[in-house]
Image (cartoon, rainbow, N blue to C red; front, side, top):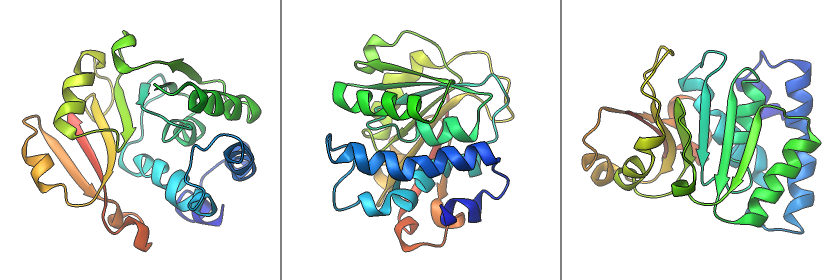
Length: 206
């Protein structure tokens, strides 16, 4: 938790409690259902929770903002962001039912009330959202085509509605194929740890 409090010092006691509980719940669930690599579970806070919360360094959404977390897996980035922004709502969807089960159980255990869950693929989600968030789900141009219909045409945040995704590696070719306006933020701008040296936040205006 120290890493989280270092970069998000304004967390309330309730938010701190919820994020602390994740440190127990995810390892417990991971022994039953593998949602995080067993080699990586010891890095939960930096590699998964802080990585997810990096979106909170890029945008401060207004209360009432609706997010779709596409391919959430065990609840990333949706659950940490739902803790960070209790005035916003999050819909978490994944094709793998057992992963959604883990995310839903963890959300219930920490008392999150601003999250909903769906077992299925993006084609089965017909709602509109202000932003879609994801972590390394697929190639950017493919992802944009997939989720454009889920983006609401009514925008009320300082940043226009669109896609915010977290990716790693050399993205030059991938970004070059995307025709919509985008912003590429190296996560090393936010966090000095080696893990973030090749990690990026990509925002696409839709």
